[in-house]
Length: 226
Image 1: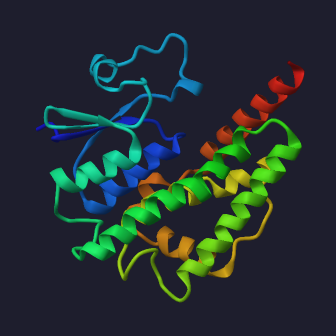
Image 2: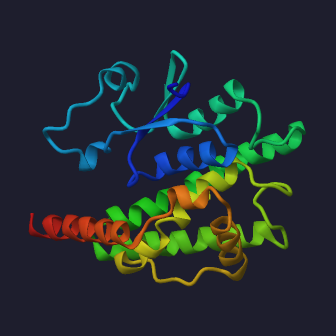
C-alpha cells in the first residue's frame, strides 16, 4: 500500500534534508519523489503534475499527507507535527515548544544563511565573510549548548533537523572556504547526531561530497569568467 506521506525533493537541498531527517527520526513511513532544485534541475526534467499544482514557487521541499500538500521546510516540519502527532519532535510543555520553534528560526538565520553564502559565493572576500559569520554562529551555538546533549531539552527535537542539514554538508564546505574549526561542544553535538539511526538516511557518501564540491567550484569558475 502506498504510504500516506510523500516527500518531493532532492539530496542536494538542505531544506529537503531537514524534512527527511524529521520523517526518519519520527519513524513516519513515506515515499520520496526525486525533484531537483531549480538551480540544478535539467532543462528536460518534467516536473510532477501535483508538484506544479501545489508548490507555489516550484521549489522543494514539498510534502503530501493524504490529499493535502505543503511547501517550505519549517512550515512543513510544524505541519507534520499537527497531522502526525506521535511520535513528536516537539516537547509537550508549552514553554519548551516555544523554545524549540524559536531555535528553529535562529538556526535558519545564523547558521543556514551563511552556510549557503559559503558554497554559493563567487567572490573570495564575500565567501570569507560568510565563513566568518558561520563560525560566529557556531560559537554562539556552542555557548547555547553548554553542557546539554541536545539543542532544546533532553531529547532530539526539530531543532536538530535544522542543524543536521548543515552537519551533513560540513565536510564539503571545507574545500569551498569554511576552514574554521568547530567548537568542542558543537563537534560533540555533531557526533551525537551522527549516532542517531536517522543520520544514515541523510548522510552523504564520498561521491555526493565530491559532486557537491565540483558543482560549486564550477559555479565559481563560470562566474569569474562572466
